[in-house]
Length: 141
Image (cartoon, rainbow, N blue to C red):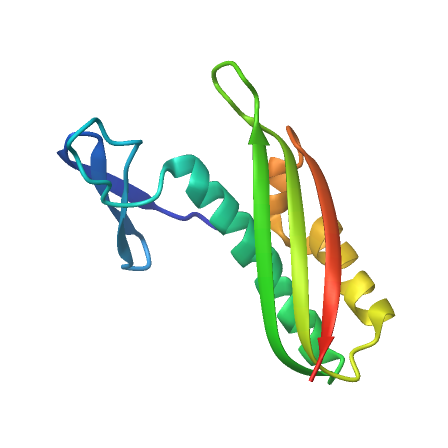
């Protein structure tokens, strides 16, 4: 079983400096109080980033393994949170924009399905509380 680590250190206000076990540092913050400047994204925004990044990595890997000429991928995620605490995500809308030459729609559809159902651990975890809707666009280059 693989273990991952992360830690945060309170800096000021509602801001924390983050550190991952792999040595990456960053910031998280809550919505700042009046007169304060935000030092980073909120934890729930980072969940959306994690979903986009996790599935994006999968999609690129799968399409490249198919030897397709993918030149770019953008993944946009919009989340709807429950009105009451703990304000979990109840729905995510994921839009994939795949760029490349001669990219078949069937390959993109298969890659998305594999990511959503098998490989993207973050999306699969979030899928326990949220309905995940996805769509894609292929931009020919």
